[in-house]
Image 1 (cartoon, rainbow, N blue to C red):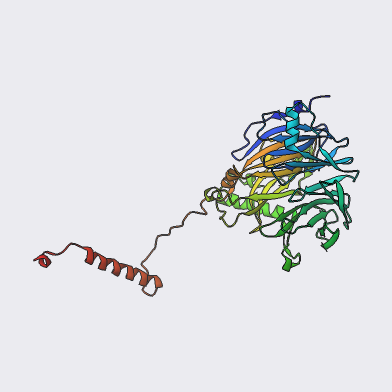
Image 2 (cartoon, helix red, strand yellow; image 1 turned 45 degrees about the vertical axis):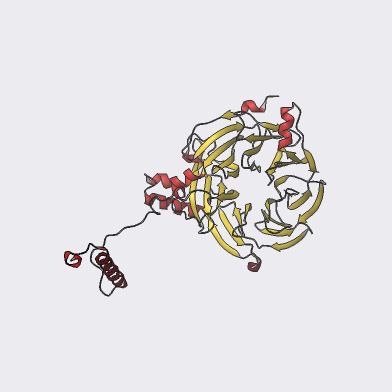
Length: 446
């Protein structure tokens, strides 16, 4: 069997000051629409269907951690929330396996085969999974059901039923113990108590398109879900609001507004640089209309970046999230509902993936870098991007908005103006001070 690492190539070429494609791997089987995973320093993706690959940013080039245990193609994976130990869960039609990465790396150094723990089996095709904040429970979405598994006992805690279509994303509520939220192709979301297995709330149908992604912001206590047509639906999770809708946002229109703003500010030298990708060429004479399906939502913390690098973003206006779409990556401000930065894959000629079928994002707070894992919509290419968040914001924000504006006066202050009294008082005070502190006259010294 061919060594999978032979397909792994390094691409250290800098796409720009903000984006670098670090590595590229090509799988024999497409991983489009497979849930990929990123943590602060690790990226996880399936290779050739059944092998779970872990790439660490500190590892040398071409060095992958290969985990074998699945006999069916891997369809979903997710990292745990704790750093020590760092867990990753992978799922396929046959097994749901939990891996301890520290133990797996130690086994490899000893020349042994790393093994995981099977926590579930034969649950169906898992489209997505998520670990609880304490890494004790894993939620899996298989078909129109949500299963919660106890990691320690490997037992099914609850089987949540109620969705009419395949469940596409699930998240644990960070401030409500036992609360789980799921979205589905039935175009609605549901709130569950996974401890008792009961349904707390069920939304109405939100859109004509399936819901694909989900994000819960703990600071604003809001739920954000993304549709296949590029719409964002934002709801309040505060108890007194009863899941009230806050806003509905059209991502395409917001990016058009952002591009127009950049063009007017002079950041785009030519009008075509601000145009959105409307079509993508597949082959000779073949084109497909590009939409903005919201594939992934992830936190984006700008509060640690110095204000000088954040351009016109104020320190209190850093409540943002990443939006991963098939055509690009966007930083979306939840405070003002505006796009603050946009990266289109097609703008970088050396980027190996012009259209993405899956993506995952993970941020490193130490150096303000974000890892982005992309899987090609067509074919088996998988790329790892490194994004310098400060450089991206600095390059795309409107220049001069934080500088002071000085306007010379065309005439003196009017006597009736309130400012006139302050000027007169300042002059009289200054004159009196000069009289008191000035040198004594000759007559006074005699």
